Length: 170
Image (spheres, rainbow, N blue to C red):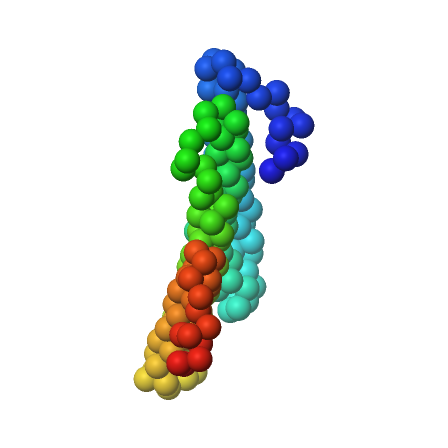
């Protein structure tokens, strides 16, 4: 985040860094709205072409992509605030950012699994679903559980907990 300091003259005066925080918030909001519009456009395009996989990926990516934009904007704001008012809270920002990235990735994968499950169980032209309903739901539940366990292990590893014992037990 050192490139931020090259573009912003960071000052300890309240009116300067308050305006800078406002600009960061407005830019983040604008990027989020633009991203949601672009994803919505491509989602509608995929629905017209009846692209089952592309539509599921785009629908699953809407919320996590927006969260990523906000996470980046908040990270930039935290870099600004850390230079203006040093506090002990800012020492843990990199770990918090890493945990939130893992959570956002897990959210995307869980939403993708749910979207694919719904699309695979959607009846075809003959009125029958293309897959066995019980099998599709069981596979989706197992995949969600796998994503949850992997995300939990990654979060523990990020926080400095040794997971070698857990992996050896598993």
